[in-house]
Image (cartoon, rainbow over all chains, first blue to last red; front, side, top):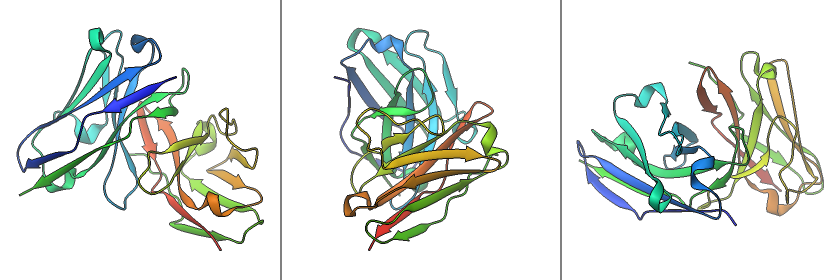
Length: 119
Length: 106
């Protein structure tokens, strides 16, 4: 059974960085891209980017370019998303997600990580 | 940037059919997915590749996509269907979500 388990809530100051982890189990970690999506309170979903755990290749949404980094540790089946130069607009629940199969549609989601950025 | 538009809210009476639209330029040329999200929960995939249903999703959920509009249809609406619904498309190496639609069953 596929599981994506994320790290706990974070409280950060403006200007700081945050790293959220996503540990996968129940499938070959390197076989499926991991995507990161966020959702501010009461708002819609916003895609941040993707990472291929096998190659380490990444693709980021334009608005996050230069501020986001996605990496992985294949020995522990864990993906990480780091976002720098935080502002209050970055306060949101951050999700990792995996495709149902080979397509860009997400059948598996982590439980979400709340990131709260205060000034 | 590619923008995808959904109505903020839709209401339906129990047992009736709910339709939620998702509009964007030439959306019918792209694959669209739909997610259901209940409060405090991560999204749940209910439709992918325009009209395919994942295993375990009720046959009451169906999808279509043509022209500039994709549509999620929920037949025989039930109280348990009350949730936010998000459409998603892929354009020029960027994944885009609509703003979400709150479905009320009353």
